[in-house]
Image (cartoon, rainbow, N blue to C red; front, side, top):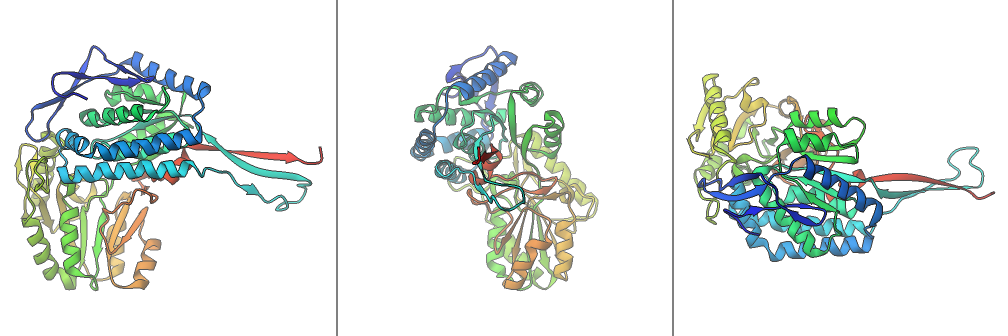
Length: 478
């Protein structure tokens, strides 16, 4: 794969296709041209869907072949970790150390999906559960749902793509990837590895283009059976409204919170929260955006937390010592600068940060925030965290739940009783005890409630969404 002046090609029907229009991808730190990528038009979209439809009907993807391909991709990802991490760091702005972790996590995601493919099975249905069954045997089988369309974001340009591609292929479905245009080089690199691993032609396509053109055409193509999307609630709602009765998995926004209770290990909590509030410049769906402290530990926590924040290094993502790299664009950095200024004007207190240099935004800590401020109510998707106090755990629960989102929440506490009760009381899809809300293991079910989305990711769970259950009844008397 080349970068710079050469034009990267799309992957359609097992071929590399160049078009007459190109999208420029820039290095997010220095602004230099990093790559040019062919942009899809109506013809390329139709060709991709047609190829996927044709291969679905004509070329079965046997389970053992799926396993071999997915395991080979995992091996190739591991071997290419340094090369791909450098791509992610340059086109996405993610610090190189975090980018390497993303590549290795992606390899694990493919391994998980490969292993799940070997154990796909239906289930027996009890024949005597209802009267009048007679001599009938009943069971279910699983089969591929059909063509899957994956629309993916910029912040995890490899692992979030892997979480859609690997389960789709493991379930036997062809997939069309529409990655975020500004980080699409990573997706095309993944397609190279899939091709090298022996994925059948037509089972993977990659189209680059805007949501208003390529995205809309994909949404309106009735040959696609399932959509899997990670991004904003506004776009997620539009997808759901557009596709009608077809299936969809939506992983949307959040303003995730972490509670630090009075019995928490304060020093450990402060160190971990200082890191995860600003990882990838806060551009993570489950980034720590809101911290709620028991009032009795406020002083000790703040002293430790701010000490860790002051040690964070902001700068070039290719520097292994960098903790916080640039945001995805100067436009986004300018947006959050405005949001922080607005919150201060509305009564919030700026403890540290709030300064911007191009697309770099300093780690920012706010206190005295209130409901109605964008930094509280909306997803900041930036290196900004707000800290508030509470007096009772019931108050803390109410503060976490007072949100239109519900992806994950973290809770630091030594109380076993509280740890077991909170999952029933917090309105989120995941409760992380003695860790931040920003924890995710690639094999766990991942997804939220309210405006944080529908369905679950994690290979085993995503695969269930990507298969049809067929009921079989055999009358043994005939």
